[in-house]
Image 1 (tube, each protein chain N blue to C red):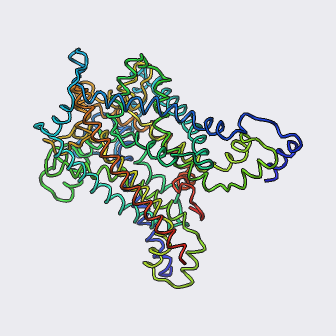
Image 2 (image 1 turned 135 degrees about the vertical axis):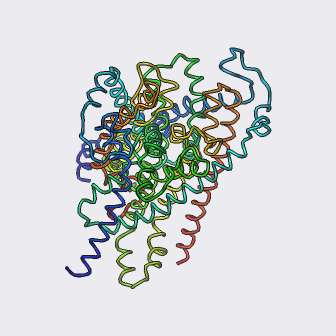
Image 3 (image 1 turned 120 degrees about the vertical axis):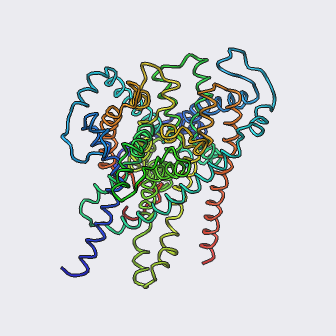
Length: 320
Length: 278
């Protein structure tokens, strides 16, 4: 504060005229860079995508795009490999992976929160957070190695425990799906732990102490004090995980490529195949537009619920 | 010792075991990087082996592009994230202080680029870049990565800015400081945790980004994830020593980052609502 008044002090007598005294110019100056980025790298590509989705256009055919109206969209739904199976698989994936990660992450978060004096806590947390920062492409490949029926370390452990047949985790239809979910959970549970620790950190100490003095039972403490302050951050973590797991791709490609059969073919995997293996640009654009609409709907609901809760809270706060 | 301290020790032991369990696959990768090819494929897998540094020497020897790819990783991620954080800070300041019409809508629509599966984003950008002749250019890649890092940075920084009292601005202005002075000299220094958190989170993403680099980049812009994905197959099979060695080298910087900046990482995720100690 002292620095503020000192450095500004000399200017009191003759306030320097600046272009930015005009509020509108200042706002424009602050927003211009982000708007430029947004228009060039977001709006133009999105419009391009939208335009292409109404065209028949394949990169390999060498023909110019041909306008075909809604036929790409119709094809998505009436195709032999129609979108419903992939979509429901993706939603089950998102649901199961995100709920496991959230439950486990919150549990670990609470445990680590209560261990402020643990020797080597910083190293333990660093180790816990490591899966998050691995390169997904390499991680997927390496998990394939760990899951391998012959050389894999997991099967070696199972053998040690007395299993007589090696399990081909990624090739066997009964296991493949859950093997992929397990890797996703391994990678992202630490993220939910991080969010939980952050949420717990945002709870005011005084209120926790007050709850302690009032001898509230632990579940009351969690509900009334911790959840009240921390829910926004935890819900944000869930939102980010939901968005991100909806588009899971780079873990699955090296592990199963969507197989065996179609067991692990999520929407992003199918889109990747259509766009960069078949070069079917018109069709994949339509597919992408559809996914964007679904994502926007999902996120809107999430944010609406978050805001609704917040509004309710502030209304309740006003009454008391 | 008494029961209380024994309980404490058991509690800590459980936490340590959990951390080790999450770290075990990573440890397996690191261990594999010190094994010979035969040791890696041994049945049953070897826990005890005589370590060798041959894989590392081999990597530098045979893979001549390694240095270039590593440099690319550093240059691409650093410059993209720095640009993103600066741009996001300006926008977040505007959103937080002046609340221009459509602030909420803009904040939401900014997130939309994060909602799309990577191929859906890359597809139109690829066509655009191909048409404009921007492929295989560092600047074009950096700008795209910056765009990808902006939404999250804006969200984090706006949260922190909302927590910085408007009184600071007023005091600065009343004392004759210009808006620029207030923005960069008064408010900016108070955002350290938010800036560091935004920086690290986006760094992690760009550092590991593969698909966009693969599709839009070229020979001169390849980064290490590209090498990891493409160099995996050689001699007709998967080259496990290569993956293990390169992955081990490549995770060292992020691990050091999380160790050093753990506090800010946690504080950053509170989006400025932090009141106690994390």
